[in-house]
Image (tube, rainbow, N blue to C red; front, side, top):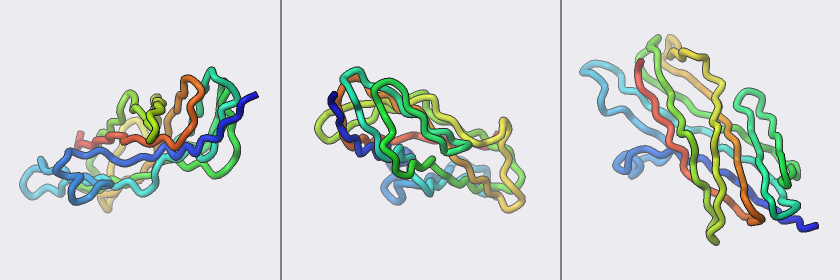
Length: 168
């Protein structure tokens, strides 16, 4: 039985437009706010991290990290080796008591330095169906996803997850 240790730090780095990334890779300011309106910003405080996983064969498998509970579940030939898995955590700031829309991608390609690939999909958050900034103009949230590995390639997988936020 083949066991490969995966130092899967499915690292979340917020993808903002290229010009915004130059000054801050983990925050994004909305330059389209109306005059006198506080622009929306988003900060990612904690990266999404699946901790340590192992492949026990060549068929691959999945690992899912719940945004609500932080629980990690694995399927297929991917097993949990322990360690602390961490959901992503972010903070949105803007006009107090305004409704916002948070959009996550359908999927994100993850890669290793030696050419391995995996896919993050089925992103979830702990946000209510209609999120609203609090009286201080802030809203904190957690997010998780499902990591899918095909084949028997281990490694340190990394990728960028574009998260956008707009006023509703």
